[in-house]
Image (spheres, rainbow, N blue to C red):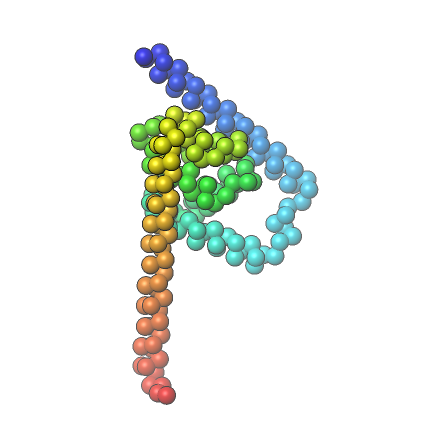
Length: 183
Protein backbone atom coordinates (compact mmCIF):
# COMPACT_ATOMS: atom_id res chain seq x y z
CA UNK A 1 0.00 0.00 0.00
CA UNK A 2 2.79 2.44 0.87
CA UNK A 3 4.65 1.69 -2.36
CA UNK A 4 1.50 2.34 -4.38
CA UNK A 5 0.91 5.64 -2.60
CA UNK A 6 4.55 6.67 -3.09
CA UNK A 7 4.30 5.80 -6.78
CA UNK A 8 1.10 7.85 -7.03
CA UNK A 9 2.75 10.87 -5.37
CA UNK A 10 5.84 10.51 -7.55
CA UNK A 11 3.67 10.30 -10.66
CA UNK A 12 1.71 13.38 -9.56
CA UNK A 13 4.92 15.34 -8.96
CA UNK A 14 6.35 14.30 -12.32
CA UNK A 15 3.10 15.13 -14.13
CA UNK A 16 2.90 18.53 -12.45
CA UNK A 17 6.52 19.25 -13.36
CA UNK A 18 5.91 18.22 -16.95
CA UNK A 19 2.80 20.41 -17.13
CA UNK A 20 4.66 23.38 -15.70
CA UNK A 21 7.57 22.87 -18.09
CA UNK A 22 5.17 22.54 -21.01
CA UNK A 23 3.25 25.67 -20.04
CA UNK A 24 6.46 27.65 -19.57
CA UNK A 25 7.68 26.56 -22.99
CA UNK A 26 4.33 27.36 -24.60
CA UNK A 27 4.23 30.75 -22.89
CA UNK A 28 7.73 31.67 -24.05
CA UNK A 29 6.96 30.54 -27.61
CA UNK A 30 3.74 32.55 -27.62
CA UNK A 31 5.57 35.58 -26.23
CA UNK A 32 8.22 35.30 -28.94
CA UNK A 33 5.62 35.02 -31.69
CA UNK A 34 3.68 37.95 -30.23
CA UNK A 35 6.78 40.10 -30.14
CA UNK A 36 7.67 39.08 -33.69
CA UNK A 37 4.23 39.63 -35.20
CA UNK A 38 3.42 42.75 -33.19
CA UNK A 39 1.12 42.96 -30.26
CA UNK A 40 -2.60 42.87 -30.94
CA UNK A 41 -3.24 45.07 -27.92
CA UNK A 42 -0.92 47.76 -29.30
CA UNK A 43 -3.41 48.44 -32.08
CA UNK A 44 -6.39 48.26 -29.76
CA UNK A 45 -7.94 51.47 -28.51
CA UNK A 46 -6.65 52.14 -25.00
CA UNK A 47 -10.07 53.08 -23.64
CA UNK A 48 -11.46 49.80 -24.95
CA UNK A 49 -8.64 47.92 -23.22
CA UNK A 50 -9.35 49.81 -19.99
CA UNK A 51 -13.06 48.93 -20.19
CA UNK A 52 -12.22 45.27 -20.78
CA UNK A 53 -9.81 45.21 -17.83
CA UNK A 54 -12.40 46.85 -15.58
CA UNK A 55 -14.99 44.35 -16.74
CA UNK A 56 -12.64 41.45 -15.98
CA UNK A 57 -11.89 42.81 -12.52
CA UNK A 58 -15.61 43.17 -11.81
CA UNK A 59 -16.16 39.56 -12.87
CA UNK A 60 -13.75 38.38 -10.17
CA UNK A 61 -15.23 40.52 -7.35
CA UNK A 62 -17.86 37.98 -6.34
CA UNK A 63 -15.64 34.94 -6.05
CA UNK A 64 -12.37 36.48 -4.84
CA UNK A 65 -13.40 36.70 -1.15
CA UNK A 66 -14.58 33.09 -1.22
CA UNK A 67 -11.11 32.07 -2.46
CA UNK A 68 -9.37 34.32 0.11
CA UNK A 69 -7.74 36.49 -2.51
CA UNK A 70 -8.29 39.78 -4.32
CA UNK A 71 -9.94 40.39 -7.70
CA UNK A 72 -6.65 41.84 -8.94
CA UNK A 73 -4.74 38.68 -8.01
CA UNK A 74 -7.34 36.49 -9.72
CA UNK A 75 -7.24 38.72 -12.80
CA UNK A 76 -3.45 38.49 -12.96
CA UNK A 77 -3.57 34.71 -12.59
CA UNK A 78 -6.25 34.54 -15.30
CA UNK A 79 -4.13 36.60 -17.68
CA UNK A 80 -1.12 34.32 -17.04
CA UNK A 81 -3.22 31.21 -17.61
CA UNK A 82 -4.77 32.77 -20.71
CA UNK A 83 -1.33 33.49 -22.16
CA UNK A 84 -0.65 29.75 -22.00
CA UNK A 85 -4.13 28.66 -23.15
CA UNK A 86 -5.79 31.35 -25.30
CA UNK A 87 -9.02 29.31 -25.43
CA UNK A 88 -9.43 29.45 -21.65
CA UNK A 89 -12.67 31.16 -20.66
CA UNK A 90 -13.11 33.21 -17.53
CA UNK A 91 -15.84 30.81 -16.38
CA UNK A 92 -13.61 27.75 -16.71
CA UNK A 93 -10.80 29.56 -14.91
CA UNK A 94 -13.07 30.49 -12.01
CA UNK A 95 -14.55 26.98 -11.91
CA UNK A 96 -11.08 25.41 -11.82
CA UNK A 97 -10.07 27.60 -8.87
CA UNK A 98 -13.26 26.86 -6.97
CA UNK A 99 -13.09 23.12 -7.66
CA UNK A 100 -9.49 23.05 -6.46
CA UNK A 101 -10.49 24.99 -3.34
CA UNK A 102 -13.49 22.74 -2.63
CA UNK A 103 -11.82 19.40 -3.35
CA UNK A 104 -8.17 20.12 -2.54
CA UNK A 105 -8.41 19.19 1.14
CA UNK A 106 -9.90 15.75 0.47
CA UNK A 107 -8.12 15.09 -2.80
CA UNK A 108 -4.63 16.64 -2.93
CA UNK A 109 -4.22 15.83 -6.61
CA UNK A 110 -7.11 18.16 -7.56
CA UNK A 111 -5.25 21.45 -7.97
CA UNK A 112 -5.86 24.50 -10.08
CA UNK A 113 -2.76 23.68 -12.13
CA UNK A 114 -3.97 20.13 -12.78
CA UNK A 115 -7.43 21.34 -13.81
CA UNK A 116 -6.05 24.07 -16.07
CA UNK A 117 -3.65 21.53 -17.58
CA UNK A 118 -6.58 19.26 -18.41
CA UNK A 119 -8.42 22.16 -20.03
CA UNK A 120 -5.32 23.02 -22.03
CA UNK A 121 -5.18 19.44 -23.31
CA UNK A 122 -8.74 19.77 -24.63
CA UNK A 123 -10.60 17.95 -21.86
CA UNK A 124 -13.62 19.39 -20.11
CA UNK A 125 -13.57 20.06 -16.39
CA UNK A 126 -15.68 16.96 -15.79
CA UNK A 127 -13.32 14.78 -17.82
CA UNK A 128 -10.33 16.27 -16.04
CA UNK A 129 -11.90 15.62 -12.64
CA UNK A 130 -12.57 12.02 -13.65
CA UNK A 131 -8.97 11.61 -14.80
CA UNK A 132 -7.91 12.87 -11.35
CA UNK A 133 -9.81 10.03 -9.69
CA UNK A 134 -13.37 11.27 -9.17
CA UNK A 135 -16.32 9.20 -10.29
CA UNK A 136 -18.65 10.70 -12.91
CA UNK A 137 -21.24 11.38 -10.19
CA UNK A 138 -18.69 13.02 -7.89
CA UNK A 139 -17.41 15.17 -10.75
CA UNK A 140 -20.95 16.29 -11.58
CA UNK A 141 -21.74 17.09 -7.94
CA UNK A 142 -18.45 18.99 -7.53
CA UNK A 143 -19.17 21.05 -10.64
CA UNK A 144 -22.70 21.83 -9.42
CA UNK A 145 -21.36 22.89 -6.02
CA UNK A 146 -18.83 25.16 -7.73
CA UNK A 147 -21.56 26.69 -9.90
CA UNK A 148 -23.66 27.39 -6.78
CA UNK A 149 -20.67 29.01 -5.10
CA UNK A 150 -20.08 31.28 -8.10
CA UNK A 151 -23.77 32.18 -8.26
CA UNK A 152 -23.82 33.03 -4.54
CA UNK A 153 -20.75 35.24 -4.92
CA UNK A 154 -22.18 37.06 -7.92
CA UNK A 155 -25.50 37.60 -6.13
CA UNK A 156 -23.67 39.02 -3.12
CA UNK A 157 -21.88 41.53 -5.35
CA UNK A 158 -25.12 42.51 -7.09
CA UNK A 159 -26.79 43.07 -3.74
CA UNK A 160 -23.86 45.17 -2.49
CA UNK A 161 -23.91 47.26 -5.68
CA UNK A 162 -27.65 47.79 -5.36
CA UNK A 163 -27.29 48.95 -1.76
CA UNK A 164 -24.41 51.27 -2.71
CA UNK A 165 -26.48 52.84 -5.51
CA UNK A 166 -29.41 53.34 -3.12
CA UNK A 167 -27.14 54.99 -0.52
CA UNK A 168 -25.63 57.26 -3.19
CA UNK A 169 -29.07 58.24 -4.44
CA UNK A 170 -30.21 59.07 -0.89
CA UNK A 171 -27.04 61.10 -0.27
CA UNK A 172 -27.56 63.14 -3.44
CA UNK A 173 -31.21 63.70 -2.57
CA UNK A 174 -30.28 64.95 0.94
CA UNK A 175 -27.65 67.29 -0.55
CA UNK A 176 -30.16 68.56 -3.05
CA UNK A 177 -32.74 69.22 -0.32
CA UNK A 178 -30.13 70.83 1.92
CA UNK A 179 -29.14 73.27 -0.80
CA UNK A 180 -32.60 74.83 -0.49
CA UNK A 181 -33.67 74.05 -4.01
CA UNK A 182 -37.41 73.65 -4.29
CA UNK A 183 -39.44 72.80 -7.34
